[in-house]
Length: 146
Image 1 (cartoon, rainbow, N blue to C red):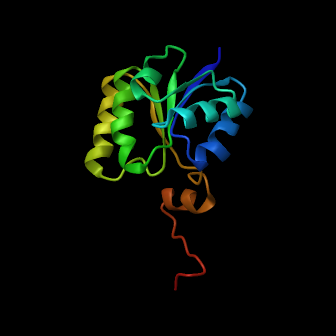
Image 2 (cartoon, rainbow, N blue to C red):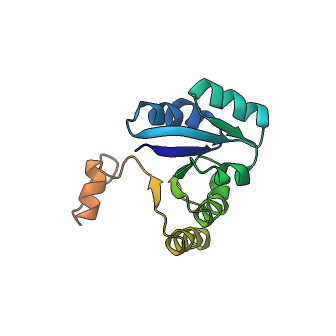
């Protein structure tokens, strides 16, 4: 069974990275895209083979083919969008940073927990050797540190 993705925003990152990655992933299906600009949403959907284009978040979240959303909207909107998605039973993958305040981050986590959906942040360097060393508690020196 394929996982149906909805992309929130049609900026350069979803254009160049996210939509192509979804389309290249087996078991993933680009179902819908949202932009405040209806023409931009339709153009993006056509280019990337999305099944639907929406100029309304509510309409995208009502689409039963969407299992989860990838938040590529401005960072200050991630919390609002994540909470809306969670309340509609959609899983949430947020581009980094997850949000701009601790209060908003806590609200995102609680909304996803309360609605039984997964929340994740798209941080591609989490398995970088430097990150691994820090998690293990080892001192990490760079060429810039004394």
